[in-house]
Image 1 (spheres, rainbow over the protein chains, first blue to last red):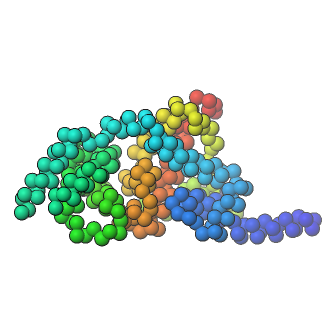
Image 2: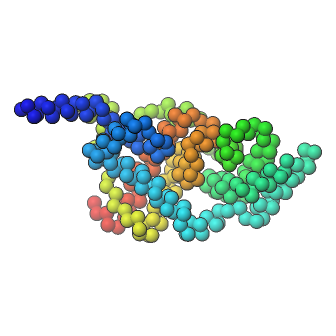
Image 3: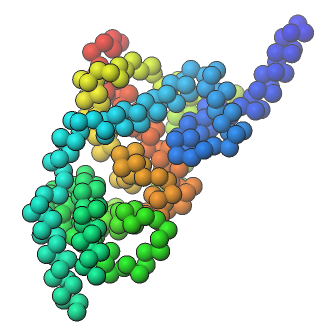
Length: 106
Length: 196
Ligand SMILES: [Zn+2]
């Protein structure tokens, strides 16, 4: 019984310190763009250790980033994107626009 | 004067064109927007305060050109981030009661079994990702593309799009959340090993 009580109050403290799932989901995203303050980082880590769904969410967000990075730096994206580069003709056309505008202004 | 623009064209032509093409989906229109962006850049050169890099400054101009293009052509869009931010219901989490703030049962992230070394899976990922990006609100898609595909940091995105840091992080949060769910519903579900 004593242990149970101790457990209960421990849970209460934990709940107080730990962010809920909603906040953890936000922190997970924020952590991808900035360094979180120590307390937030600790709350995030602790919650993720104990909550399966937030752990999945966190890992999946980072997996998406990792896969994008992998793809951006792979050969086949460079091939595919070669098609979405400015062609030599396009560059010349744009150049002409810029030059004629410069003449107009002077 | 032209020297700068020629220089910009050489340095940033491709990224501006790629970004523009993603939205307008037509090479000539995308090219026109790049021209217009560089011209506007030349005229506004004095307003470039050096708060952002030249590249993100030009992306900011291009972004406005893309918005103008949509406004003129068909859709009524504005980069009014306030409209996005004010809509602050988060439908993934329980609103009240004992479980307040935890995942609603039907919103819980599923388990993903992904083999990151399998080139086929990665190829599929890329296709689904691009479709999912397209399904986003255009403003959310823009911040996501700049951050994750062009790998520009938050500060520079805020400068380029003239939005506050607080709003940017909310927008990125929403974009990622919707993309995660979209990928789960489409890419993960479509995987051959995924029974039930
Ligand atoms: Zn949780």
